[in-house]
Image (tube, rainbow, N blue to C red; front, side, top):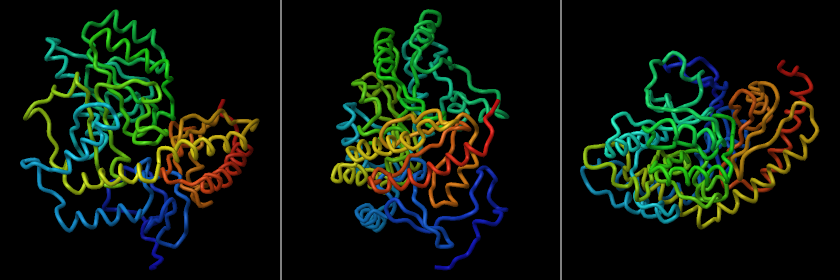
Amino acid sequence: MNATTTAAQPMPHVMPTYGRLPFALSHGRGCWVWDTDGKKYLDGLGGIAVNTVGHAHPKLVAALQDQVGKLIHSSNYYQVPLQEQLAAKLTEVSGLTNAFFCSTGLEANEGALKIARKYGHDKGIERPEIIVYEKAFHGRSIATLSATGNTKVQAGFGPLVEGFVRVPLNDLAAVRQVAAENPNVVAVFLEVIQGEGGINVSTIEYLQGIRKICDERGWLLMLDEVQCGLGRTGKWFAHQWAGIKPDVMPLAKGLGSGVPVGAIVCGPKAANVFGPGNHGSTFGGNPLAMRAGVETLRIMEEEKLLENAATVGAALKAGIEKELAGVPGFVEVRGQGLMLGIELDRPCGVLLNRAAEAGLLLSVTADRVIRLVPSLILTAGEAAQIVAILCPLVKRFLSETPATP
């Protein structure tokens, strides 16, 4: 392999929208990747919860090679049989009824917001409003940015879109107060587990309570499962732990194992809000993306990856908790399955580089939360390796870095 270091050099022709680490990845196998200098890393980030079946999975590779040789894109002027195949599987595992396909989580969330607004207009509400959450993240378009609860990412892009009412997570009283005071509310838009916000988990009681309020008020319950869905928590979708169903469910990230695929899956209350001409996506539902989705879900079932996410994720969480118990500066491990956040009491962005230097890929979100969202094929042995690499780095960091006042 040519051990060039082009990625470590400035990229003058690419917009500087990302804070990149100084290396480029060249290839991967399973939960491991190599950079262009030949260094090997254990991938605890999984492309930010995208690479569901790992890197270069032989079944997925063969399916995509087959599809590329047949048809990559056709446009939605024509029927796309693979769309029906993927939609049928998504509705089967979700208990919902219909799906719309796009290419990203941002698109799926944007579409969900449009569904809510049209749902309100169809009910005669001229200025429909949507309940959203503190610390939420739904994307970076103007509408999804407005629904997001992070002033740092919103800064410089005002005026934001109106029509959102913000409440804290896991506070049913706050939602009831909004319901009592605002007759224009038409929907609740909620990440079951907040990803970018710091791996903040909606409680089962809260989800059940929100479902009840939405039913009482005739609101849509829209659950953003872009990051926490598709087997990551040990069930197909994180809300299923609460025994409820949403009316609208945006998906993306892990749906295509790296091929861009997004979806809005709807139940009966929302399935027919959109009609011809109300929404669309040029690349959405193209045959290559649909084949990726179909094969991803098939591999997940064949290899029992939901069960693997639950058991290996529990072992990973327990291992981290055991190693960091009693360490000054360690707060807690949050999350479920293979979506975990390790909160410290001080900003820890430097661990991104230190972990990479030690051969582990991860991310830091909400300034002080280490995020682990590896591929769902992660083995117990690889989980133990993550603990063995990461926990000494965290201990050393906390011992050397003063706490934030």
